[in-house]
Length: 191
Image (tube, rainbow, N blue to C red; front, side, top):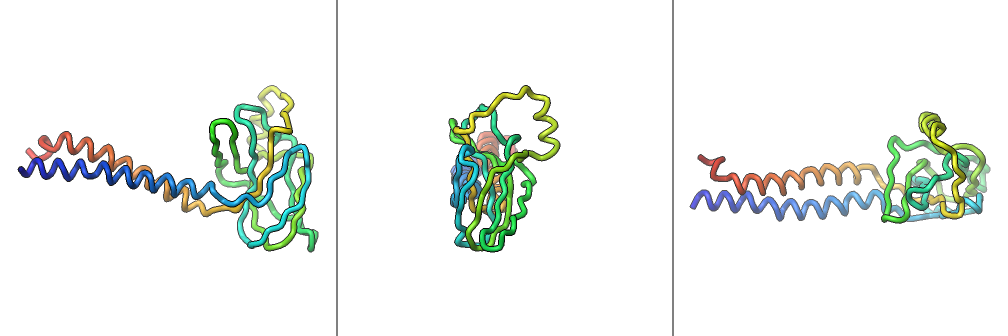
């Protein structure tokens, strides 16, 4: 009777782990779900947008998967129209990307912006870090189809969502696999 009770308790970890896994996936998705403030095609090269809430924002490259991207040909610049001051664009610590199977997004820059109207321009240059540019220089150059690529400015979410989601995914995997393994081997663990 005791063995059966212990086995049931271990197997109860499996639905708890599945529940935690669904919560972890939703938490991780929050990191990528910032509101799109502005989107522009590479062929347009400039545009205007308004930020209604001061905060952290990021610039994302959006385009077809498995195609050459134009990030080594253009560099974005953003300046506030009222003050004519350029915003400082920082490279993110890690290149975060997401895709839906046919199109993908890659975060290129982070920046802080107060409320106001802004001018966005794609200028000649590179959006890659110096080491990435060296490694890309080794590959054969092909022309990218600019009409298939867009730049997006999105509201940035805290990296804590991503870190918390990853940790919760690992914990839920331990619950699922540990509950299954301990439930099957409960007899060996007791005696």
